[in-house]
Image (cartoon, rainbow, N blue to C red):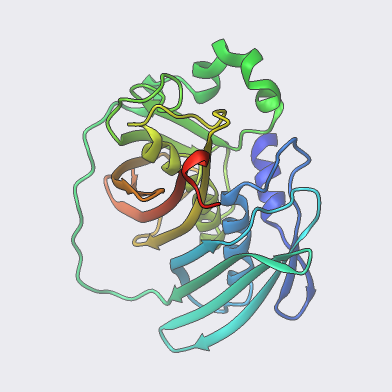
Length: 285
């Protein structure tokens, strides 16, 4: 593994402090709140650590409060059900005595069934595209310490970057992603890395048509919920096409969908996220 990927694997290696209770930490970075993909991935890892058989097949999660990056996160797992085919877990992430995140996850023992899927879009190969770091190099001074942080996910955008040139763009985004290095053969770890990476781009798809940015003092944005369905086995250290669109934004909420296709064309994961998109002046008193 690369040094940057070591950082992510260590982040997902939770400390077991009691039966069904785990503790995770945040990276030592200058952030105002915990990255949503981190708490989602750590929650899924906590759930999976209590499951004896089956792969993750779905998760449904709610972001309840901003996470404090300066203190550890406690993950409490509730063993809802252990069935012959499906196992269900509920995870609550806690800081300062309050829930900041809630996740329900289900695990399914492998079995044979019917099969169909959407075709993968025809897009350029990832090797023909520049990395995110290369594309953002001209903005290095403006981005501050972002360049000094570990970048465990290699991202290769197809077309323009959605967050660089204002609004007016179609609410569609495509990019290739993969872990920056090789991962062990652990399906749970690959699912958790995909959960971590999936929260990096969906919100930007919602914002693409609008002339707002994260630096706008009158704009408030935050992920509200996040859902994933894991359809087929995949490796997060091999290229995955992340195909996203945003069908709607209304009433201070936006919706984005995503699909992760393996390079072979197999549809591996489907995702949906809703986000708060509020102009502060129009929010509740």
